[in-house]
Length: 117
Image (cartoon, rainbow, N blue to C red):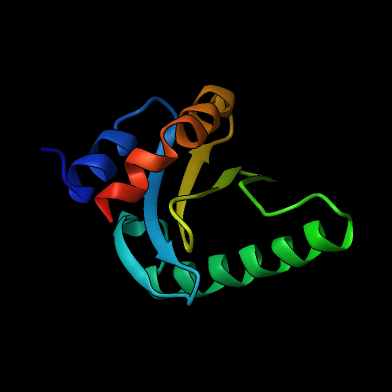
């Protein structure tokens, strides 16, 4: 049986993925493989804040609940994908990576990811 650590390790091995984390909607780090990419507590807190504001924006626009978000920065991408009712997968990807299939996989396998929590 796969564990949450197995999932993060597998995700981190995908081409273009630099770092990963699982965070709660309360801004707590559940687990991470961030390495030197960032402070786990700061990543969790800011990801939860981002998710909360994205939820509110979706509600104001009548779009429904947030499922995933992709942010492009100068040096790479950040993906935020729902993992269960109140947790998120955070993925830092390199600038040239193809994040489309990764985002699709995170959404497609969300129930299985949530079951690991």
